[in-house]
Amino acid sequence: MMRAHVRRFRVLLGVVVFGSCGGPPIGAQVLFDAAQGTLPQQQGWDYVALPGAAVLAHTGSAARLDTGGSAREQAGFATIAPAVLDRAAGFAVEFMARLIEENHAHPDRAGFSVIVLDQEARGIELGFWRDRVFAQADVPLFTHAEDAALAWGDEASTFSLSFTGLEYSLFVDGARVLRGPLRDYSAFAGGFDVYETPNFLFLGDDTTSAGAVMELSRVALVRPVRLAMEPPGVIVWEGVPGTRYTVEAGVGLDGVWKEAGQGISVGAEFRFSIPTRQTIERLRVRYP
Image (tube, rainbow, N blue to C red):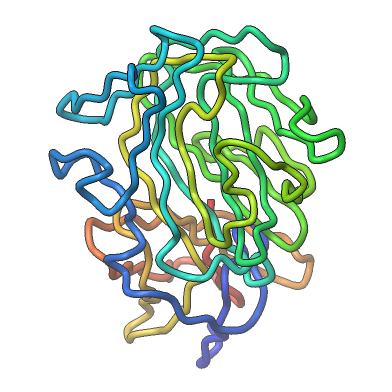
């Protein structure tokens, strides 16, 4: 028999624990959506291009940024997250992107980079090539650290950069490809010094040693969720519109969790009907 009560869980972005956690207004969690027909700067982001030769356009499905014309060109999108980025509670930045071209003149630089810094300005900078993704080390500063092979397709891929405790993980279309320790880049002093900025996000080209043509379709902030139950046998939670969550069921005492289904919604409310054909003692929602 299924238990008459439901435990409350929270998602720690790959690790699920008991508890509950609130969140910001759901509308603020989708930070950029190209489907709205506007560029990131029309959706609350800052856009910077130095010295200004970058080409930015809306393709109809994405914001396309081209810095390939000059390796010295730096351009990208930056914002302060609308909520505190608490690595102890766990969070992820999900983005849909496509890297069309990339060139670099230095093994520690990339034409497309992503920076995520938490509330203490600790975080990670990742560099993307056409065939690899790598982390920027903090000792020695901005040198090639852990990396992994990465295959870009003809369509945009969904990336999830998650923070849990003192570690980050990068997932591509749901599969983890890279993980490592968070870094402290505050020793840097120079142009584009954002590395003491709490709750900071950047996507683009931040180096004068590389260039790229990339497309950005979506950026979202994913935070822990609160589960509730509605009769008959439906669990509900508020999540990020357009983000896919996995519902897992635990049966017996062996500690094994199995996928029970997936939840995705065009709105903020997610609902999942609990299967009645099997005995389920525990349920949790996992992301990514």
